[in-house]
Length: 137
Ligand code: FES
Image (cartoon, rainbow, N blue to C red; front, top):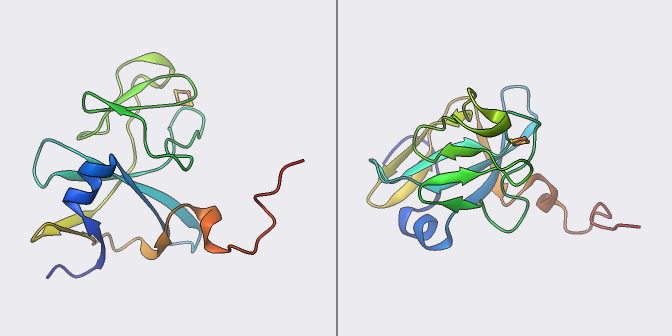
């Protein structure tokens, strides 16, 4: 078994389209990370859930928008290769998604990146169900 936290299964990522979770970075800041399907081994990739152009989240709670193996930025529409993370179009052209290390064994995905500690499933807003941060005026 890989040395890390089990997140989910590759099959679940493929079926749902993506999987979002929150992990603490080396500065103990919570970061959202998304798993997305990739045609290349081992079948998934993990990316920080932020567009390098203007810090737009890809998954805002409804999953990562993906089409034909490309992650779509919901703000300006730049497309990122789901496997390499690279972008060659739109306002984010020339940038790349920030990757997070994961490993797959027996169909299960593990967070193996030493810079991140798993906190919980879902986004950074999902850790406190009693929080009033979901209220809008
Ligand atoms: S914020 Fe993503 S392309 Fe502009």
